[in-house]
Amino acid sequence: MTATPTRTTSALILALLLGATPLTQAAGAPAKAAKKVAAKADYEGEYVNFAEWKEVAQFLDDMVRKHQFERPALEALLAKVRYVETTIQLMKPAPPGKPKNWQAYRQRFVEPVRIDAGVQFWNDNADALARAESVYGVPADIIVGIIGVETVYGRNTGRFRVLDALTTLAFAYPDTPTRGARMAFFRGELESALLFARQSNIDPLTLLGSYAGAVGLPQFMPSSILQHAVDFDGDGRVDLRGSAADAIGSVANFLVRHGWQRDLARPFAYPATVSPARAWEGYIGQGLEAKHTQDELAGAGVGSDAPLPGGIMFGLVDLQNGAEATEYWLATANFFAITQYNRSYFYAMSVLDLGRAVRLARGG
Image (cartoon, rainbow, N blue to C red; front, side, top):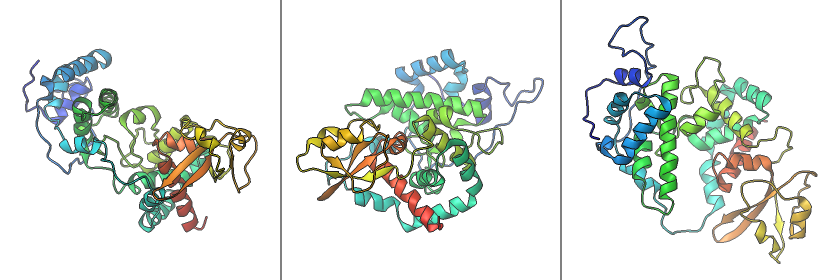
């Protein structure tokens, strides 16, 4: 079908998306005004009539059928959505280049600016961090590490309109071997973004985030907001952009729901030694979980100079260092809980190291 762009206002679009009386019409009690959030992207984007695309039309049909959205409102909203070529380019695989280098990666995140900002964030939000540790069992430094790596404590939350990014990626993802799966993923995230905006009574066009559609201090994708975000400041709504407390509680809740163990002793990863025989190679890349006993790993030639706690499982992690020697670590379940936030060993280790650096800088 063809949808013609209209002059429908954002307020009218929002009212129709909510299934409420349009704000321009008084019928009984006045409709609740949407929260006004300044939204200014750092790009213009390209107008394309997304509603003319067959796959988009099917998506709109699904939103009406599954979630009772108003079709005219979705079409009017889509007329305001822009195609963003930058998101396409950023999603393309990097060309072959230098080998992975853990120490170079670490230096990007465990550095003075981020550590100083982390100390300030911790000081400003000490009560919320202590409460999150009490409620969820996730130490403050882990939460501080994640928010620091993600956005430098809210300094870099992204200047893309989430609907622009998600719509572009959901229907025009670059030609890669995983294109079909990635498009399905981003269509699911677009669906979640619209549901979250309706649930929160906000204009979906005011949602700003990363080029991939991640939102707020902790960079939650919209589906994670719906599933794992919490109102930790008790004001009756989830706000990962403006409430540090909500971001703190939501990060802790996410980790618990992805395997964080309250009673697991520190540290969450131990430096490992590996034998020249290399029988241990089969234990690399065995999924993001701790599932091997010390005896299993020792039998393959994996040990540690640090004393290991008994009765827990480990996974063998390799951190490549370019031309230098690879580092090996024995990681526990809590290390792998962090990898559910970002499926990267480098990421999880950076979170641990940044959190530790901030804790030490505070004198903890």
